[in-house]
Amino acid sequence: MRYVRKREGSTETEINMAPLIDMTFILLIFFMVSSTFTRDMKIDIVRPVASSVQRAQSDPIRVLLDRNGGLFLDGAPVKPWMLQSRVRELIRSGATKTVLVVTDKLVPAQKLIEVVDQCRLAGAEDVAVAAEKEFG
Image (cartoon, rainbow, N blue to C red):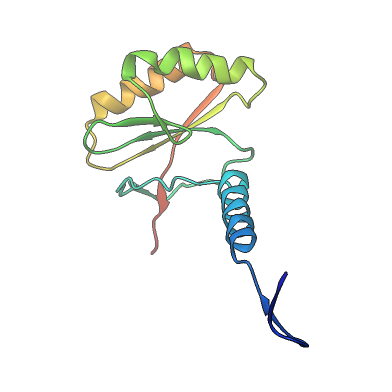
């Protein structure tokens, strides 16, 4: 604080706001850098319905196939010709050997078979297709 004399015996104090503003910006930058940002997958998928649905035993590698032909591997977009090598890399890195294909019910069967085939060629032991349990 800086003391300014106006008259004899009286003092007036001023608060310098520059360090306070600097500290606020430093804290803002720190929290922006240290926070994690999650990208929410905005894929509109209507899963097929089946009466023989079972819950997966382990945490599988997820392959998402949307109705527009988009292919995603654990949330990251991937080209169809790169799927086999990416799944192989995940299996070699110690991830599970189970692959779960989450697909829309409007996806053609040929496209689904190609994705399942690429996952099996990559070395996946179990390849499953996600479905919703049928009620009734």
